[in-house]
Length: 383
Picture 1 (cartoon, rainbow, N blue to C red):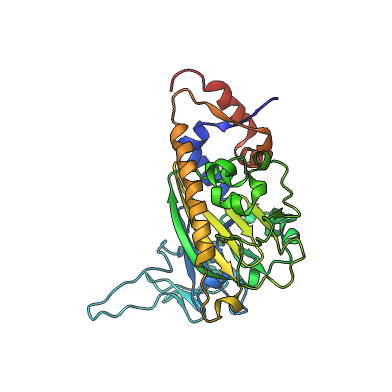
Picture 2: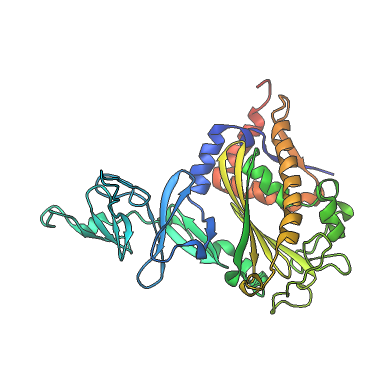
């Protein structure tokens, strides 16, 4: 039996690799930043995307638009800046009606990013307003999830990135679901450690007793041979992720027979994990902050008609997921600490962890296979 090597240990620990990942992955690939319904009506959503301030809004036709949060004149941030006066008034800036107004010199932009107003300046020789549109950010959505791309001129369509995922989960009404609750976790582990953990169930037996009591297949054979296309079955009588596997919430109406009693999961690299049950979806959005620190927003999504019912209480699902999540984060932190051991050069993937190799292939495709081999070969000796 030949065990496959993971990425080199340094790729989980060093600021140099983290900086390269930020530039080659998170500044270039499609990143999930939340839900479409979070965009305020008539206003902009201002986001920090890996150190870059970004504006996401809807234009007058309702189409999604995104821009870097910077005025083309002198670089002031367009949204999020409040300049006070002696009488306490705040001069309007950011999105004001159908315009984006800079708080510095009142340059105006349309909701499509075109420069449309320059006080006391008349376009003429040497100055063409068309040359001063806002820097664009790619914006798209799928299943109600909002994605941005910081290098839109080089970005493939989001649909191409998603591949067969939308078809596999087409009967789940993802776009119609709404966030009932969210939990933010700060995890002292590299984002790739967390992705690898999500993508295998070899650890489920030792780490997740509650989860395995609902889904016994997660611990059989080290989680090998799971049929993710059809879905992984719950134990008899269980249909969802709650303490006893049951729920009073109605199943999504268009699910097939398997989907009413099985669990499905999808991973959209680099930062969106989605777990699907018959009555809810749970989404994880990863935000890498440092080589050893990742912020994770866990969103609990339910049908709006269920949320509107008197007495709606998602705590059975939220509590179940919270203990499962905290078990995962604890073991991921242990991995991060353990990799700091002086002789550790790389880990290994067991045969039942074949899907985990996806993260290695994904990262190599962005950072380079040759670099990976060179680091493995050159990491002998003391650190």
